[in-house]
Image (cartoon, rainbow, N blue to C red; front, top):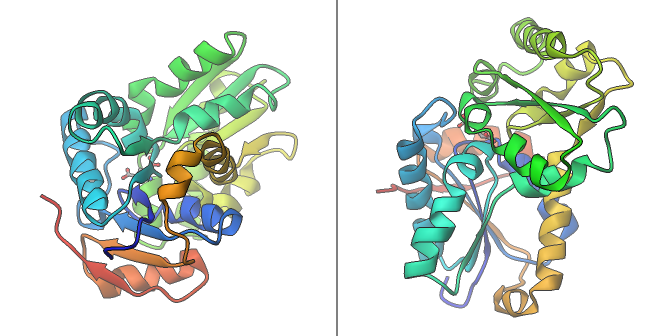
Length: 275
Ligand code: DGL
């Protein structure tokens, strides 16, 4: 990989592939490395310190693999680790590299979408408790009120491939009911966990068609493209041979099977350790 300078995309598990897929569709010429910490997923209910340590290890690994730019394609890691990584690790040890999150670009899109100024965020307990969506949205659109609902059962459902099952429907309906009980005028919801788009069929079953579902993967892909246009110095450092390499901290054949379904193309990953 010596001449390669890919864009690194990180998630605790498979969910970040929903982001990677849209980024690759939008910018197919670049090289990408996806890293899933499947062996330690889910991150959603872990402490701040644990999510920070795991995410920092993943970022360091992606830098070692030659990535000058890393996208945390995970709301939980973006909420709990991004700021400290940027302010402490990058500033001191790797000032030439960049790590981007996915909450800020998602919050930036909300102003143009909601009409009632009432937005629902569904996410992991970690993302919800961090209040990151509330804080980021308040800076940009103080008129928007954010309602949140943690959905702790949804990541295990996705990671265990129980998508499109009565169990998935049960929990999606339950969490939506809890969200809309907070305010029935919510007109926009953010699937604020990169795993949740895989449950889109269940969400559509229980949401009125008037409610807008924010497509975080499209927003992040667009915002990354804009970022590279604004930072031609970083763009020039990135290699462009249309390759994707996959790494997982768990068994690679297990990863390949599920990842191929997510990507709609065969995936052959390499298993690595993070520490
Ligand atoms: N996919 C991650 C997110 O966007 C979290 C999944 C997990 O709990 O590890 O929040």
